Image 1 (cartoon, rainbow, N blue to C red):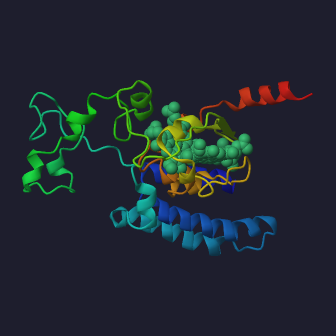
Image 2: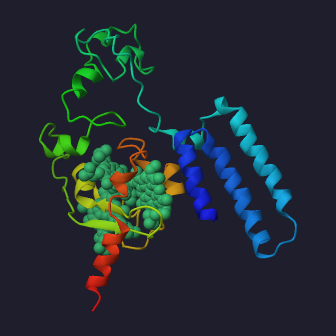
Length: 255
Ligand code: HEC
Ligand code: HEC
Ligand code: HEC
């Protein structure tokens, strides 16, 4: 039950990341006092529901107080991309190209009065030619790499050993979601083994305890997904293997 609640709240925090701090607090409150009461009913239920409801109420009344700190971690990259109105072209880009990317002068990072602003390439100009995506920064980066639309250098220093690993790893609890397929090849085309091993992941199947809550909080897969790689709202890109097909495979491989 609590597991399902966690997941439900995980979704809620995706939909409105500001909730996650309040939600996490309520889960903690609920799981520390609700579970024991269920095992041995003692009438402690109201005592723990009050702080929980308070926390949730505060989250509802003050949505503006987020995101910061831990909440910002979960919020990273999960906001829908800012869509500039079709009618408003980028100030320095070709006027005919409507942009779904924020122009540099408006991105809050670049100084709109600086001399460089007219020299720099606009994200819209650079990204519009790449395979489109419907989420994140609107580029399907794996397709861009595989199709040769981009050919990034695999190392800067001479003599760096570039290692690619081909196996796929299925991470499955046989829970409510299709199982997760982690592909090594796609990751090692961008990353070095040492980006993931020994931390955040031990390089041994089953040695890590994955959790969607941790991922939503920017740990584990969430260190990158939702930050620099496709956002966590794209559930089925990770949860891509139907549990039924796995069960059949397992049954078939048993002697
Ligand atoms: C970056 C990859 C990734 C994305 C995107 C992702 N998940 Fe997960 N999810 C995982 C991993 C890894 C686990 C742990 C799998 C396990 O242990 O079975 C997990 C576990 C879960 C679980 C618990 C196990 C289960 O099957 O009940 C649920 C529920 C879940 N995710 C829901 C979601 C939902 C809903 C979304 C989209 C809003 C989502 N996930 C997006 C990687 C991801
Ligand atoms: C983006 C992160 C990431 C990168 C980069 C990465 N791995 Fe992994 N690796 C994982 C994950 C996740 C697992 C699954 C661990 C589990 O099941 O608990 C894994 C598992 C493994 C395993 C165990 C496989 C088995 O069959 O027992 C080995 C060995 C391994 N990785 C080696 C490597 C090597 C070598 C590289 C570089 C060529 C590499 N990994 C790059 C994330 C990564
Ligand atoms: C160190 C950073 C990092 C971590 C950690 C990481 N990924 Fe990724 N992942 C990437 C990058 C970079 C890409 C390629 C860009 C993209 O698709 O957004 C990617 C792509 C993927 C893809 C898409 C492959 C394709 O063919 O389109 C899947 C699926 C995926 N990751 C699952 C996972 C899961 C599951 C985990 C956790 C077990 C995980 N990743 C952890 C960086 C990471």
